[in-house]
Every structure is written in structure tokens, then in C-alpha cells.
Image (cartoon, rainbow, N blue to C red; front, side, top):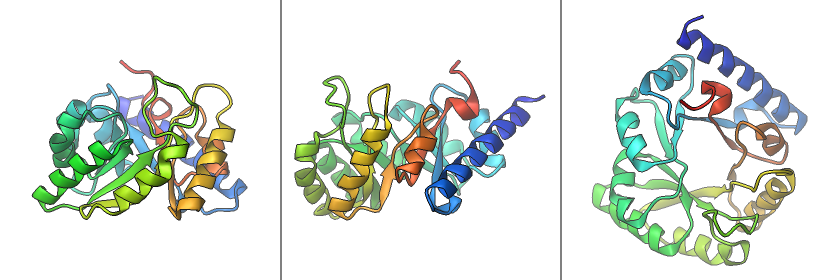
Length: 220
């Protein structure tokens, strides 16, 4: 089996699992966007995924996104899904169409200025830290309302929803909590769930799932 065939087979399995989870939650499989996470995997792997229908790709680091996103076909959409240092806001806007990890007003303002200067309207998510882990990025739930309101007021940002990376273990309650927050804020999109737990995330309302190892295998 070639590498491209391996990726295609893995993708077919992931898509079946996404569809089944969506049906279990009373939703259409088309209501869930699969973001294929290429972290540490080479560009040819992403191109193989694109060849079998993937159109959304995620990278954790701006530098790695710069090495891959510009070389994907024009209909591919690049998502940054890792923490962004404030001094990399300009680079982030140049390479990605979506930033899922706004967790401070300072970063939001920098991205807004960079997007405005580039003549773009950047799609963004506010990242919420639901597990209380000091080492994790994200805004605390108690401060999320203020950040959401501030991001909504920035002219070059298009706030689509909320994103979270729960602590390891039982993630379902965190997914349910993010869904409630999304409803409170009137935000339709929820980016939650990765290779280990995307089915539970979909059952709790995820509209985007970020899947890497289930598609591309263990990281090189």
C-alpha cells in the first residue's frame, strides 16, 4: 500500500466515524468540518489528503504553516490551531484563512491590524480554557464574555465560534460546557475534539474537529 493509499484508507474510516457520530446526535454529517492536522507531517501527506477530498488543514505553528499552506491547492483552507505569539500576528494573517486560538485582547488587536493592512477579514475563534490548566492556552470561562464582545467589535475579524483543548481524561463534560458557552454567546461554530475523542465532541455539538494522527499516523 502506498502512503497516499494509506492516508485515503484512514480518511475513509475517520469520515465513517464522523458520519455515525453526527447521526447519533441527530445531525447531518455535512454539519461537521474535518480539519486535517498536518503537525510534523510533510506536505505530500497533506496533498494526498486533499486528493481524496479534504479541504481544511490545520497547523499548530506559524512556521510550519508557512512551509505548507502556500503550496496547497487554491481551494484548501489553512487553520492555525496552536498558540500564536503576538510578534507573529502579521505572519499568521499572511498564511492562514482561519485562526482558532485567540485567547487575549492583545492578540486579537494585533491580528485585526494585520488583517486590515492586508485587506482581509480573518475568520477567528476564541479559545476557552475549560480545564483550568495553567499551562494551557485559552481565556478562562469567566473572562470569555468580555473577550468575545471585544473581538466582535474589531472590524477585520470575523468571529465564528469557540475552540477548546480539554485536559486529558474525560473530555465530554468540557465539550458540553463549551456548547453551553457557545449558546450563551450566540456563536454557531464549536471547534473541539481530536483523534482520541472527536466522536464524543460531535455528539456534544462540535461543528469542527481537528484530526491528525487518525489520518496521518504517528508523528515522524
